[in-house]
Image (cartoon, rainbow, N blue to C red):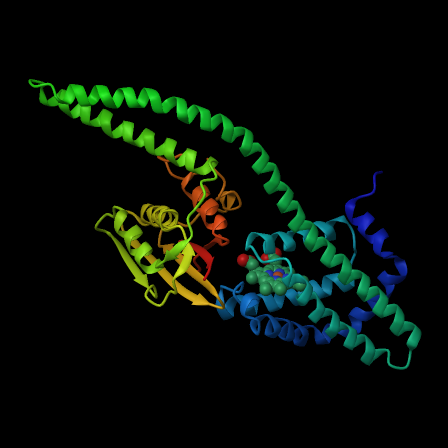
Amino acid sequence: MAETLFDELKRYVGFDAGDEAALRALREVAAPRFAAISEIFYDAILAHDGARRALTGGERQVGQLKGTLQLWMDQILRGPWDDEYFLAHCRIGQVHVRIALPQHYMFGGMNVIRRQLNQVVDDHYLDRPHELAAARRALGKILDLELAVMLHTYREDLLAQQARVERLSTFGQLVGSIGHELRNPLGVIETSLFILRGRPGGDERSARHLDRIGEQVQVANGIISSLLDLIRDRPHSRERVHLAAVLSAAAEAVRRPDGVALGMEGLDALPDLAGDPGQLRQVFVNLVENAVHAASPRGAVRVRGRSEGGQVEVSVEDTGPGVDPSVQRRLFEPLITTKEKGIGLGLALVKRIVERHGGSVVYAPRPEGGARFTVRLPG
Ligand code: HEM
């Protein structure tokens, strides 16, 4: 049977039966310290500006994560270190990838755990140097394996993204030429409409139909513009942008039913940033439009801004049903949509623009229900 990736990783770090026995023995003595170690681990994260930002769910989330970290420590020392173990630990990595946690935080995090568990080894095997060395060696190997698995999930995600980009570039060329070709017949329809509208003596019903044709031509033109924006790497300008003004203009541009309330918070305190005001406006028009759509016919949309550690953060949230978990992973890909009308370009465009400004956008369900999109931009 072909060697699995996990077997290969184990072979590379030299993880063998002796290490397994040493880890199992260590587990007996380390288990009572798991709770204290997970406290120290999350204290270290909370003490760091950037890392703390990943913990968006407040104290409840931190409490839960302390529990999952204890389970994780138990698993790495208990084994069995088989393929099921590998898959389960890849899934943990995927959770970090999904929340766009920068991968370099993994090293610092693992170091905290390494130091704490090494301390347990040193305390326990004080006068048994051979066992101490064996336990330290085994611990070093399993924590290196864990880091390798975590980085593997980041790499897998990057490769998947790259494959999507390649698919899109072929697809993009096709879309680009179809888009351009469609502009011409649409232009002809518009000109003919203009001529027909100017003719006296038309009846009311025909006029209504002409209006509908006009509206639909505009919809079609809008779709083509979004498609072309998405595939074209339009250079963006770098002006000083007053984000509060951009956000207010974006919110005003979105049509909202009476039953949907719109709240804006913390925008005035946002610092100016360098970027393309037109494209950033598009980002927030798309996000607010989606939020209003989700919260309709009755509900609320809230746009909140804050700045911390040299970064600007704007979240757009709604009281709608939230995004179905099956769609969440692919939410920012083109042609993924949950709306009846719409072809799924809005969020792809948002991601594209935000990333070209050196920022990121993530989705997370609101703990109280509904959706929350968070845009982070360098301040
Ligand atoms: C380096 C060692 C680390 C280990 C062993 C670890 C372990 C875990 C585990 C077991 C989970 C639960 C996964 C699940 O729900 O199935 C998790 C989730 C999470 N971790 Fe880590 N983690 C590490 C590093 C970090 C760091 C450095 C941060 C923050 C800077 C972090 C932030 C989070 C967050 C926010 C979640 C929850 C995400 C969500 O459910 O939305 N982790 N981690």
